[in-house]
Length: 226
Image (cartoon, rainbow, N blue to C red; front, top):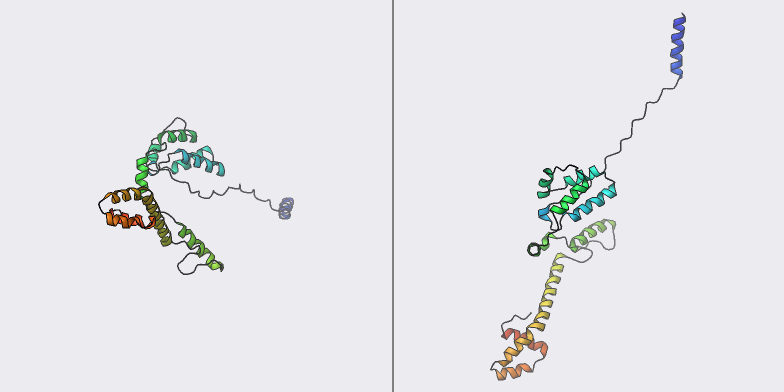
């Protein structure tokens, strides 16, 4: 009887006492959002590795990376010859400072002017983003907001189109060509033309104004008048 009473007493005490709360699980920080790191490929960049390493250090300072994390992220962004070199790189102390020093030594900035000129000559305007793209994007953004500068037809709100930009470049080129011809070739062509034995035509030509005379001289001397 006494045993039964003790058991019931223990059960009643257990019911009356509040349940003990379980220990809180440790808070695991959420993984950081993916960061778009610029890849480094020596064959596609003439700037060398120093600028890319500076950008990596700026990101590491901003996001508070450890040295090991910075090294891993940098290794994942290497491409081409730099990636092949890193796969065979086995230093005694693999840290970011060692990687930066050797990359900057292996891949300095290129000063090959002929190669830069070759790439510049092969670069086409279709590969670049012009101001008309930005204008159209802004117009599409403003149109649903019922803004005053909204998209009207196929023209962007800022009035800068691809056709208009190319035409402006042509006009500028023609203007500069004409200025160059007037300053460099017109005088020499005029002297050579007047020396020829055309006294009647030469006298008539000298009566024209300078503005009219130069295009005419260009036609007769074989130079195209701009």
